[in-house]
Each structure stands twice: as structure tokens, then as C-alpha cells.
Length: 141
Image 1 (cartoon, rainbow, N blue to C red):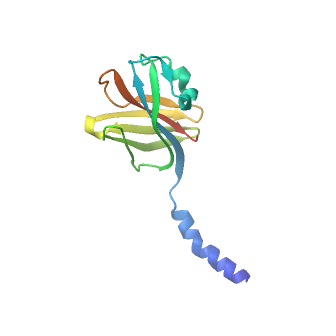
Image 2: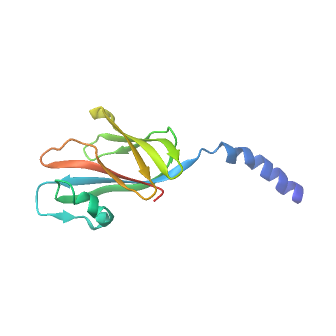
Image 3: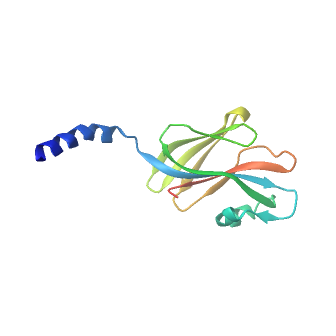
């Protein structure tokens, strides 16, 4: 019985070693609006301090997911309106990560470094009709 357990452990070891390290990242897509009465989607209460410092007075969360991100592997998310938001985990140092944020259709790209205790809100589309889309990123949620 011990021999079988040892053989099984040896067979599974290469698979465990081949697994890429990942970091869980909470990603939320937000819509900010200058139109209408001031309102904050209750799901965004943890971002109230950051969102209240912008020119936008109405905030809605339009999507949310937490996904394990592997280094240098693009994570694509569909934005309302059909454009793609691409996030790439570029580096990790102790308690920070650097993530590249791209919207390929707009040819925009930013690099953001975030600590475990931070959540970043970053505008990803131009304002149209008083509205714009933003992404909130939080590693190790």
C-alpha cells in the first residue's frame, strides 16, 4: 500500500511542478456618469472614497469577476459596447503587483502597480455623452 502511495505521489509531482503560479485578482467594470442624480451602486461602497473625488456623480457596477492571473498571460474581458479590455500580470514583488491595462481597439495602454491593501480605479474608455467606463483592480482580494 505504501509503495502504491509513493508511486502515485511521484507521478503527480511533475504535474504540480508544471502548474504556473497565479495571483487572484478581483476585477470590476464600472460606469461613471455626469448625468442624473448622484448615486453610488451599493456594490461599490468600498470605492466611495475614490469615486467621490472624480467629476462623475453616478456610479454603476456593470461586471465583476475574480480570476487567477498567470504571469505574462493576457486576461481578456468584454466591455459593454463590445470592446475588449486586456489585463496582463507583469510582475510581483513582495506585496505588490504590476498589471498592464490595455484596450487594443483604442490603442491605449497603462502600467499600474498595486499593493495588497489597494484597489485601483482606472478609466478605460473616453467619455461619451457624459459617461465613461472604468476598471477597478484589486490583487489578492
